Amino acid sequence: MRTWQAPEIPQLPGPQDGRRDPVVVHDSTTRGLVEAAPAESARLYACGITPYDATHLGHANTYLAFDLLQRAWLDAGKAVTYVSNVTDVDDPLLERADATGVDWRDLAAEQTQLFREDMTALRMLPPATWTGAVESVPAVVEAVQALLEAGAAYRVPVEPGAGGDAPELGDVYADLTADADFGRVSGFDTATMTALFAERGGDPQRDGKKSPLDPLLWRRERAGEPAWDGGSLGTGRPGWHIECAVIARDGLGLPFDVQGGGADLLFPHHEMSTSHDRLLSGRGADGAPRVHVHAGLIAYQGAKMSKSLGNLVLVSRLREAGEEPAAIRLALLAHHYRTEWEWTDADLEGARQRLARWRAAAESSGPAAGQPGTVLAAVRRALAHDLDAPAALAAVDAWAADPASDDTELVVATVDALLGVRL
Ligand code: ZN
Figure 1 (cartoon, rainbow, N blue to C red):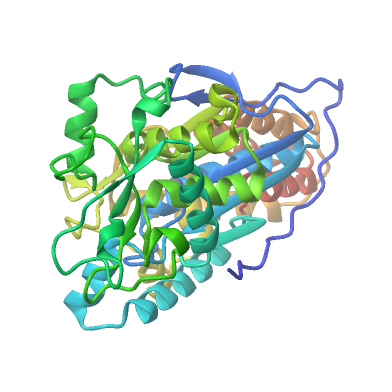
Figure 2: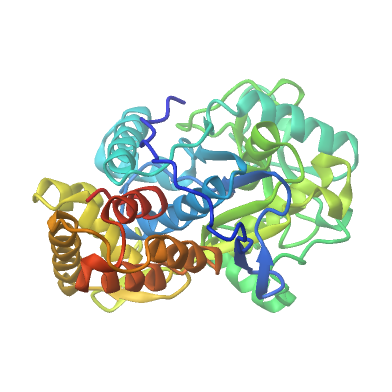
């Protein structure tokens, strides 16, 4: 898919003493801090949106975390490859299109365009490869055929009337017993996994499955649903987890450094897609993403912001109301990406005031009496330590209270390059 215009990033001088903290992030599997990308290159996959109700602040908060990670990597001189997807055909999208009487393709295209505009306004770095589920169909078909041939997948009979011209082919599910490492990403016990699977779009009750947790790889054609040629699989469409596994494999290669998303993706989505990665790579545990990073979910009006509850604050609505995207960005940056917090109007008001203070400080001229580069070093250190944006903002706040303490131009470039905020 066409992405969006990349923001310009000013080049920053290297550390004065030549020493740099490695960028560490919290890994959901080990529940500890690990170096995000130890090699010279850094490869990131962040799960994309299903294009309806885009882009709410929960999405923006998640993509902002991975934007900071890339900015920290780029500043450290790494070659960064970022890949993402758009789940532009999926049950919830089709349900929304049905409920509102809109063609699902029009809904997906319109919401994907809105997402592009929001990401551009928020100065988010675009992915190098941005693949839609629809675009991924041929690659998914080939991958599912390979899993079937390897005995790592099986067919489940479909109900009468389903399956188009070849109903005997059935839906295809992954056989999780083929992956000895299944469950390692989340570390959850079976009861927890089963409960979350049912809650988050899985189908533990489906008849004919070998195990309740086995995930869907290929859904055969159903009346009234879009379907694509699946070769020997028969007409149908991809499951969600295999979609991300295949897009990540083709865009980054396996294994890659960081798989990211919102906290609700840890299970089942990342557990399942990582299981697929192990099998598709042919390398078992060595084919899995090294680190799994999850952003906290934001609440609004007393509950987690979610499409099903409808308590969404949309970036596009804030922009329409005249809110400056830099203020939206700062409002999110004031909270560490892993925390769960509740959005209120005070968040935006605080961000507007902070932006005004920083801009006033940038306007006040005069020679730096203090130590030039103090803010840059502090912001670098903060981001390298699990993307600690609140600590980075505190360092810029300290300068804004005493603008002569650092070199103005360097601070402005630091805030632009590392925090994505133009003063
Ligand atoms: Zn995904």
